[in-house]
Image (cartoon, rainbow over all chains, first blue to last red; front, top):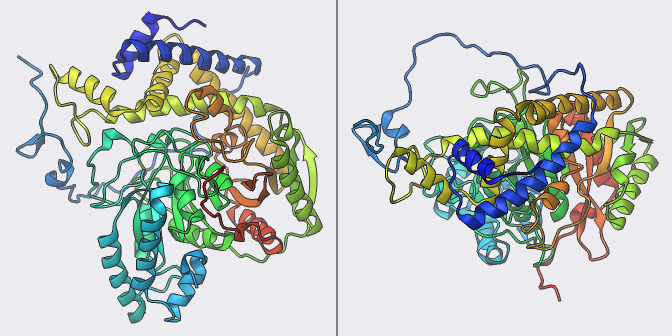
Length: 95
Length: 488
């Protein structure tokens, strides 16, 4: 498969990553090599095999619905680059 | 006598017998770090003051009889992708600049409750993405066995710190071989436990269905002791299995144990003297009473592509939390919220991390999901079945850990696909969720360590460790220490 400029731009939007021109060029080449290598999986006959997301059966884990204190706002926002009144502060999003 | 060359349990015993004080041995470890780490770069953060304060507290606990673990008072260090309360936790990434968690990971908590003294946080590949510990924002780790060599990765700092005698044992994490391959390259013992045996709470996620925390140390006894402390159910990790801590009986008796050797693991691309050392180890185990037999695992070639598709897909989702808002690095200038996301992430992540996020976003994107992600999950099932079949016949699978000994620094950075291919013997273990132990089994022509990989059925850590223990009782490879000297 050929990785095109449009594909790289689209992946950049999905991943919220901006690449400069030279990064884009090398990402295109390397991804093409890697994705083409991954195509080797087509050799494996997986007809009738169910996709396995976990190696062991995992199920929902429930706990008793008991009231207990949640983490302090101060601790939650401890590492925030910007905060205000116990909240994370972000640039204005609605005019 | 140089304490730093002793095993963790030996030091613990001397502390208990009051031959050494905890503060004294902590000071010795910090001195050793000050001496060695300018060359090795195994540490991102050394917490000297915190360690000395903890040492004092632990000594008191031992004296009063409240701390009774055989490892109480023994100084250790933690890979920098595990949260440590109030201590800088970076994942070796610029994007976590200044991040000090307000809680510790369960594994770290349990060790502290047992009286561990934490010396600091260990260098690694950025977000554990890499096999050489060169993608760190804090510079590459250097293998104590040769200054031009990589210690492997991603837990390169965890392995190098043990090899250089900077810590008596360490914690690492293993998503596709990140404990085992560095253990092999640095001549130390490392265990990747069964998925779910050790809580992942507080481990900064790379690929959640594959990540597992495990110990590295100088020998199997140390590793088994650490495992008994960190393993066991944790309600804070929903994939943690409902079982108690793993206690191991190390008898050294391996008579009648059936050991399988997958012939596909010994084909093209395997360094000749690695093959020789690993097969010699198999012979040794046979002499000790094990039954060794060759078998076939034809799915071997498909493990790497399946692994990288799954790991990158999970990474692209997991790493979406780094947005310049909640913690860590935020771009200084931006137009609006979306621009803050773009700029913080683009400036904060290194190239290998960006590459894996992008591969992940691609294989999950509409139109490619079935061809790549779903296909990889099906191949994962095929690989799991292949292991299940093997464990119908064998107690353990013996193989090399990596196709080569320690790589030259700089060799892998220019060709990511080549680096990925080096994970051929380790990744399928993570896909199948199995436990896997690496023990030193000799040296190559240049004197670099070779590691033997022993993989078992899920939850058979005890048996695996016993086989490794038997091997170490009969050999002395694990007792050798590197001399950090400049290569010609």
